[in-house]
Image: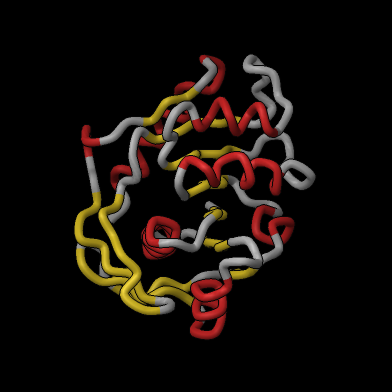
Length: 183
């Protein structure tokens, strides 16, 4: 699966490393005003991760081009505080395509609804699947540029996925179960 992680903070780097080490092609995006992690990941070709997740996670693309980050990906995961949800949605809006899937992590106060609204999609519109997690599934900290320590990765019933429409519910449940199984 091709995955784009939006956000290069603690959670974004942990998510990017987790998906990469599970064998997926991962792109990492952040806005120009957040260059530190993007530059380090680009320079070293990936993210060093230790703790509950261990290894060097290759990152296919790290940069500030949202178009390049989300082009031809299956899954977009927006990782950041609640105030980042709308800017991420507005950034992807010109480039997101029908059939792509988005997870806002964490959802924080209806993040999936806000994301759909920013994309100017009706609640019932299923051309782009938007869901959210109840919490960030990682207790983590960046220890230095391009390095993240995952103290705890939540698994099982410790966090939940909310999907807004019944039409693709089975797909999203399977995706959530897969997210829980990432090692």
